[in-house]
Image (cartoon, rainbow, N blue to C red; front, side):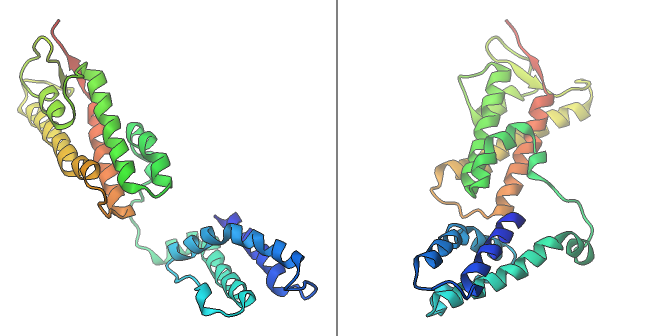
Amino acid sequence: MAQQLERFIVEANVVVDDQKIDYSGGLWRMAEIGLLHREMVVLRIVKACGMVPVDRGEFINVVDYWRNLRDQVLGVKGICDNFGEMESALAPEGPVASASHLHDWVWRAAEQLWLAAAYQEAVNAAARSINARIQQKSKRNDISESDLVMQVFDIKPAEPGKSRLWMPGDRSDPTWRSLQEGVKFYGVGCFKAIRNPASHKEFTNWGEQEAMEYLSSFSVFARWVSESQLESVD
């Protein structure tokens, strides 16, 4: 990000400050093309830093637009260059979560969509990934999602064709029963309350923070699924 801002500033300096360039000539236009190539990215970075981007429509002279945007980007770059110090000085201390630290089943499925800001689709992809992992681990391809979770995490013994995924621990201990049922109902909740809206609604209007919380919910469930042990009857 810092490199994008730096390159924009360098190219903008040529466009707005080089007195040797004829603003109506081809050399100036070639220089402006470089700015146009980075304009949308730069405006998005400016907005992400909590600032209102310069509005091209406010300027009759295009050079004035690039000059004002250049000056704004200089301020944004200052924020980026000193972000670590600002965060330490201004923000309360607390845990910081990283998307890349989510369970691998979740983040690998969601990453490319997430980076494209397609948050609803990213959550949907993570849910599909976990469903496929449960089907694969339990050898149950005849059902899916909430029905699948209800059956494979049931505390009843496995039956022919109906395997179980049981959490580690002493199954005679009430705590194990509580954990097993908790994992079951938690997983059902993830599929019914998160996956279903993501799949069936055209637009959910999920923002980045809300979608990250949903990915985190699936990440917790994915860790339990990965820890579970297969119980089957031939």
